[in-house]
Image: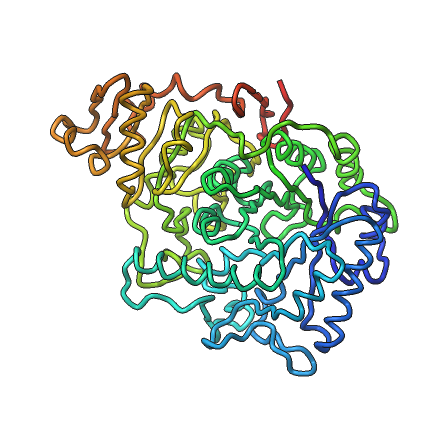
Length: 501
């Protein structure tokens, strides 16, 4: 696993202590996630500074990921000489990187990828930070929206748009494109469009719920898995303890992540010296950098699987910020099926995740509940409605949720139930046609070959909870399985640190 740290181009070019004391000697980290703000300078100067930054990292024998976030907070992203970094031919607001600038980043051969910071956030919340910065006067979506108001039309359109965007970035020379997900949605759509899953941990969603979803996308679509361990919590940095930071970094190692980095270096240095956060980061790097691990996310063999169409719902229901819309389209609202997978995860986590959403919100019950990084979870992955037989074959228990599941996936589940003894939990709409007549009342268990379907009206059923309890593991542990390898992590009482058992 490669280990990195989030720094800024200005720090690298100036030799700022936030860079030099943490990774600037080239011996602590493997790579950097470097924030670029090319709009603050003339275009030619931005090109030259991109080349200089690449050269500095090359001399340190490090690669780097070029991160872009400036476009998320301002509608006017013009350089002093008038070059526009965010205005597109369709008149909408999203990051624009031309081939020449990407070429400057690639000039030393050590660019690992380009990161569109919080890309999914911008899409599903319609560039919310731009709207807030303009005091509500400017409300631009990222891509043109479907006019039909149909969730399937909007998903298909967004997938086409995202793929075209990713293809453009990668064809210009970037080895990879990733987002950095605040919310645990769009991982699968991004992955099948050519964008590497990159989940935030230690932030507003539980770290291992984010992992289960992002890791499921990486496993299903055969991509690497990246992880940002983010020190922010809401508007506070640092919003977590040094011990929580170190545990989240260790979790990335145990979970088969390919690249992990800490955001940000700001809490790690004060008055020219390392703080406890910096010491914690360096302690982790010393212990785990280059440490042999003979598996990664591609070897994950989850025993509990959640299958659902990702319609971008994670629990948003905030009249000010996280508005009740899907894919950023105000015409499309979540329905009962949007919430099914959230209820399934509530059951799987022994009731520790929220029934109504997956993040600690500003408004609602979760606001009153203390944040925790880790929830009990037993060898779990979340897949989309297109997942195939080979990806599912390690499962002992699965939940079928959402508006639609493909016929191929239904057939795979049916074969696994019949031949492998899988227990499949579903509402009536996803049952095989020949079994629908056997579903009675609010809870029915229907034997099918060597396994069974459990048909419920609610994933919060007390009968269901009792029936699947043997699959769920212990209520104070995370369990991960990679082929014949089992990893067990004991969760602290406050949910913020872990220790391998």
